[in-house]
Image (cartoon, rainbow, N blue to C red; front, top):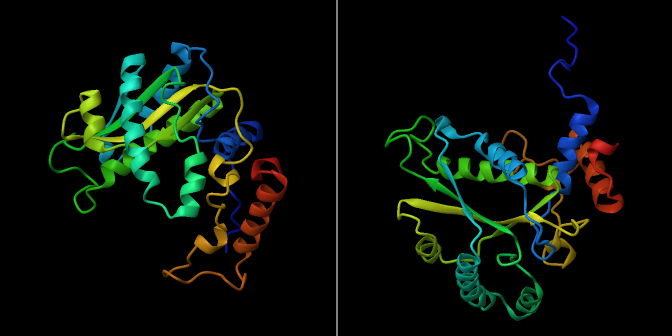
Length: 253
């Protein structure tokens, strides 16, 4: 049998690969660290272009990017958040409600740029390659654009915070979004004083990082490697321990 070698021809150089992983592992949902300094158009342009180069089903590119810089519009949106946030707090049991009340969940007014990423579900017509049997793929594609944007922003030293506590129709009305366009993500964007070492909700005790080994199924749903027999399990457990206990990410080892 032919002795196959691992094909490294198309891999990034070590420093380039490390930079990709650094952006992934140090990305944070930013709420309270925004600075007033404006984001230059060249930087914002690169971030938006990265979003526009996200994968999309049928290459339909269903996303739109609505920039909000007006203080009046920001305050209008902030009012919608305040209303929905008060409602949301009442949905949690008492112990969780106390933690929830201490969380800062948005930077709408603080961030110099707000951005609404939306999905045009009519783009490319009624029949779209890849959506014929899974129609929600256009929404998932739009979320890929959000992820691209977020990682590009982190590489530029720009913070991003995702605000999702809104009534959808109220947000559409505030931003003049047509009924057939779906708001996917309302993002607060700007330079920040610092990025937190760990996700803010993890630090606040809202939820821990789940063990990745518990989330991997082999061949059939429910067939996890609880015994740790698969070598991949040991690799993942060691990686997660390094991250959680020592702050050492895979690209650093």
